[in-house]
Length: 156
Image (cartoon, rainbow, N blue to C red; front, side, top):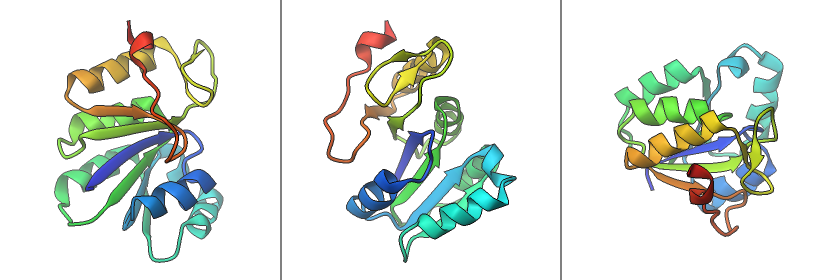
């Protein structure tokens, strides 16, 4: 599989931990979130929630980009980010990322429902367009076995 970049504003929760990581046979989990790096309590909770045998690291977005540019391990890597903006920053800087999965982005100011779990505003939709135009496969689905959601009606 290589690298999957997933957007989930809850980051690592049961859906990710028990379905995505296990079904995709993930070896390593990289969480790229600037705020989380400074939140020791949340880091402890996230480290306790990961499955045994899966490496996990929590990095800033900039550090994640640097790490992804330097490393070329033969592994299945899941990179989790909490926003479309962070996904675009990482995908644009790391040519090894060819697939982005949008799982959950909660309702926020200016957003509209693209699915029951995905609410995007105009700027986020523009970043999605940029990813598609860059040749990145964009998939939208909350659960691993859920059907794919077509974003094209929202991309204008």
